[in-house]
Length: 242
Ligand code: APR
Image (cartoon, rainbow, N blue to C red):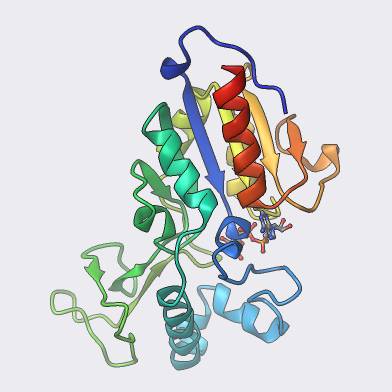
């Protein structure tokens, strides 16, 4: 992995785009992998906003189980290496993940495109947001004191508008380096959002499964490694090459 030498490296704008493969290093299941959340396939209905109407209790139980799984894991080495880079360079993070592992690793400047399972919001609204204790479940009948609407996890389901699109687009347009870690690049509008990367930027895709170049939303170097080892190589290059 060769990264351009730059005189003013600390002026570099770096953007990390992270997907479920990064959290997989912490033990959080991915969605489409072998033991992914969408297998058995009948779970995938809980990724649709319609399930809040047709299967509310089962949908809440499914996402409550995800919360409990996240409570039991810790940030991976890759999460901490990203935080380490934030202390040296202008690093922003755009994540598709709904866990709090970036935050727990000490990172800041994070856009949660698909929301955060730490919060709940009233059904049909985006506000007010309530931070829910990791030790609590959200259940049918739990209502927002202000809107009286049923509370639901503040995660974006298929059929809903993602958070932070314009801000993420600006960060990508201004990026000098973009590192895409652990995503299958299958989900819109996230995938086309990556098409807004600054044409002059260097792009790296860290994923143990190589992608067809034609499938990449933006030309870049593929680092066919897991997040932890791929991030370690990136940090080596930065320490030696910049
Ligand atoms: N390190 C890096 N990448 C990994 C690792 C690892 N240790 N293990 C798996 N991966 C890669 C897989 O090769 C795959 O390309 O992570 C990717 C995970 O893909 P998905 O399961 O599709 O997850 P993601 O791309 O984040 O899904 C996007 O889809 O269902 C929605 O809202 C959900 O945010 C999610 C979105």
